[in-house]
Image (cartoon, rainbow over all chains, first blue to last red; front, side, top):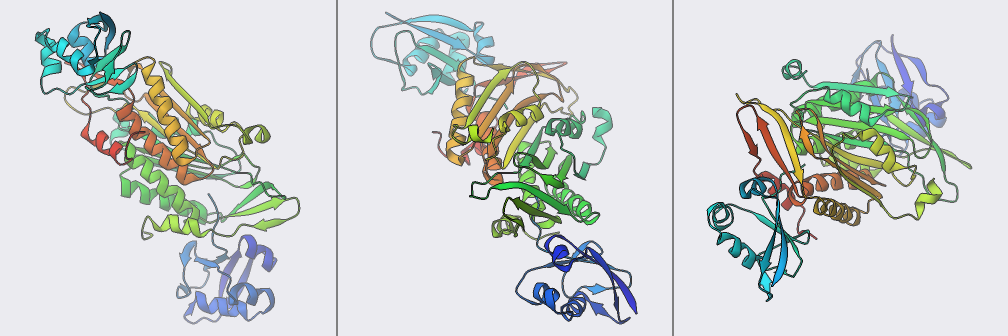
Length: 86
Length: 86
Length: 163
Length: 163
């Protein structure tokens, strides 16, 4: 078993009702896509935000990532809406 | 007889040894080109600066002008090198 | 001092802060008596009001502490390399900001004006799509997270591939 | 006040002066609490040093009193019309300026960043070819009027016909 540090920002932080949580994942090769599938399996707002047509972004260890990006034990994985600063 | 108010700037001011002078011209239709010919006729530095390959600019009443621009009695006619501000 | 500055690497300053900034102070700081600099390009973004029947009261700016600073530093580095800049300052405010308040400062220093201004345009375009900030609009009858704009993605795509 | 500003015409401020200017003060002045403004583009030109064996000691800037102010006002007006700006400030210093000193400020205010920055670029390009200023370079062994640069004429020609 490995542990990821999940973080949520902006609308997703509000929708999920939390700004961070630890997530246990199997100690096998694991990608961002696998993590997203785990979260979608929670149903409700998780499936709505991550499993539907809504666009979201993921960063692993504070670098922009794709669904193929590998995650490692202890990684910080952040999920957030497309950015709107400036 | 009409009178023009000539003004010189930058390198031309220094070359001509003056920053302004009145110039009498015949009271007939007269252009910037005619004025330049009058000045070239003075010879020396005037012919050198205005009759050779050196580039200069002319403004009539503080608007950029060409050799064809008409001048009127009392006009302010300025002669200067291409600008180099900014 | 000019002598001191000649061999120094480009100055990059990045800040994410609640406090306002002074563009004049920042320009002077970035210049820092480096006589190789011929000009600074600058963009100051402000909170704009809108005229609907439920007008904007304020924006709240959220960011991702750590990643945001890294993203801004990376963008500044890209601009320095691409346009051979002598310095870049990026300041972005967070928290609750009312119409008229300053949000963002982009400042670029270069030997030549064209490089400074082009890099400034790149940086504000890139910051809007690449740096993790999110705006929440507060109105009398609603509070809503702003959606990303296609026009911002298009503006970003003019500059080509991300590094 | 936002209310007061909404119907007002674009603010144009032009100055030719010996004194230095503060880009931060000018940006705040131009904004003047007009909540339609989303951003200001800005260029600050400085005297650059050079590295010859007879280095630049100072520039002396000469202008044509009256015509220079008219030319700057005309350029500001062209930019306001072409990019629908909410305001323009143009300040140009004259007299003797040493390496490192500020020479020129271009400041543009607009609802949108692209218009502000493009107009800023236009104004500095156009100012360099259309406004009557002349630079004289002072060195230890020479004093010489600067020749107009082809690169400046080319930069100006990007923007098309003069009005």
